[in-house]
Length: 206
Length: 425
Image 1 (cartoon, each protein chain N blue to C red):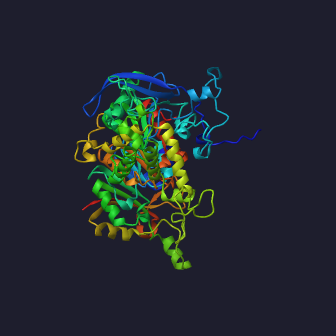
Image 2: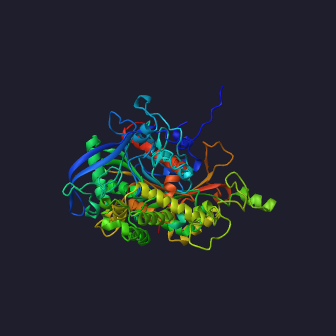
Image 3: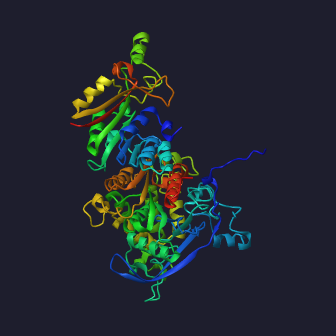
């Protein structure tokens, strides 16, 4: 397997959206695997933000620059337009102020790449409809009362959210990741809000 | 197979072994105040081995009450305890202070001030790095300071010693590096006032250092911190034994003033939570209130003990000079903002930064570290930051080796790898 195959499916797709040599800020960068990949394989200059200390230590071991920073407090220090791309992967649903975070992303970066679990996926809808309980699945593996995911969104809701907050979606990629080998992901073209479990969107200011 | 118990490296007290004290002398040393010192002796110690490429040197900067003896056992004390050079440096006394120095007998040998952090396998791994620590200018543990003899009078300087700044301390550190033939440090690191020196060295001599670790520190003291320093100074200056700083000649020591200064300082190093956990409202050696003013609460007795011990090893004038140096310190210097001051500081000579703060540190609180981090971000510097959760207040930088170890080890390891231009190990 190439190094890229070891990346989470949505992260692999994100790397393809990042031009060579970009300046990239990764919000909620985890152990820095995406950053290290972008730096080593695509010649990007990367910076990260994370709150988990074990992840920060792991990123330091890769020689990455990572700052503990609660996204809901903003991206203090970074000047406007410091980055070509700001990545927010699987993190939008855990912040308290999604609109503020989107605003900060597009303040410090020319473009944002946002990936998030699609709450509109048919399995989620089916789970709720048939069992009458909050869905628990592989991509949403938490009980409702003990979950970091406090802002679930569907693909359609996300489109409204972006446009209501002075931004626009430049590119939208709907994905099916569940039930497939982790090195395989499938793009969903038909009824994405129903058939995709994950979405990746490139956003920019309007 | 035998079962072995693996203790954490930071628990291995004195593993750096016996460390000799060294002295180097510099002449005609100019100071930030415009004054100069005709001669400055610097006491320093080194641990580990300098690599043939001379690229693995780390300068550790001590805080207000520290000295050059950062880890292991003082050679002079080891000799007194029966150690001989033939026995090799890997030695430990039979009777030594362990993790909690306060719990050790007063006569027990104490390891260096950052012993859990410096030694084989520790955060500053002496098997990999060449560690240097020097007593700061103005100090009282071997480096020239107010208790040293003024060559022009033949008597101790006292208050005639020129005011020294953090920048002056750093200049002397750099002179020491020149002396040791180290063009570029792998890292400079320190906590509290040591962190100020680390930040100042990185800003003013970025060509001399690859990485900077600024721990439990600040870029300038807030009014509250200056206020505490001033109360400490007033306690010393108001002690009748102080004799205008000439107490060396009278053979007395302003013990009361210095002890009170230390007691105040010590309170600012702890936290409400740690003091409550350690002492609560417990009384010492009695069940009922004395209805008088003797020392009766545990916390009073602890502070009195700390104050007394401090007067046995620390010079009151140095206390004045160190606190003043901290009060004057401002990383922004002449610039309007810290952001402006750092904007171009690392463009030509990039320095990697690791900033660590502690959640319960109210002397140099996390938000002050964040201001440094934000200014470094604005300058597009390579900066990493974490706030360690700890109940120990400012002193956490001395008392929380495990959490700091987890950040410092990978940070230094990668800095060395990068410096050697090689693939990661």
